[in-house]
Length: 350
Image 1: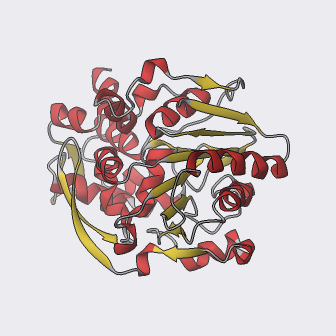
Image 2: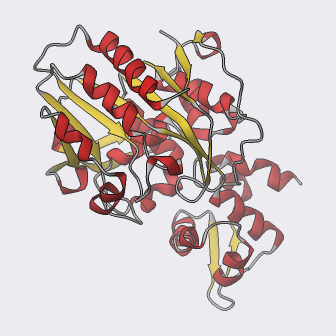
């Protein structure tokens, strides 16, 4: 059905428009249908920060879903923060108006292990049993830059369906894992919150940009493709999106029908990903120790805390080596590194 882009003039209008959109998509569902809503509440920040989903979009969806008996808003703990703390700042008090809706921390739910398959490997991951046999998934991400994945929109928002708190263990494989998650949990409807987009060092430490739009569509790959172009990022430079497009998960990606006309965001800033920065440093400064690497990186201090684990992970999969005599790291096989992290290709050419 293509992608709809709506300009936001006031938040009350957003609530009404979203209500109409969700109602039109769900009108044929049975009243007993189990509906999952996945917003982005990944940190203790208000929606005005550009980090978390605006209440008005959630309200619009819930207004349309009032006839259903089983509606669940789901999120999980993150590596750096807990659901309970994130929710306090996000302030879910408005949910008391929706008695059919439950707010669920997936990290506290009973889980079962599922085997999901990306393009490069298989993953055995624990998912909440609540995510079994649902009838409809509404995905409500925030439009962001991302220090690991380059951009974070609909596909990246599925990462929050993982119950485990230590999600950083999957950052090395994030592009492949997102494709695997999409195969397992394909959203029926994606609504992108671009009211306040987040540029720079997202998904948390960026700068809010008043993009003033939201997007909707029933194909998350198509939505992400248009969202990427909207902020001036080449969709094919985002590995997980490129993989999804090339494996036909976006279907007719080059013939997307876009309704609405709104100019792209000018000079939206995305920083080099963490992997990109590490590879650049080790190419220019081989055998650098961890302190030297951290000193040369252009990322927030809290992100730097995850870097030693990332270096260890790169060693474990043979991408870099560690010299115990010098405490230094260097890239092992450039060809393998480029294959796993294609965004680094031109670094090795220069």
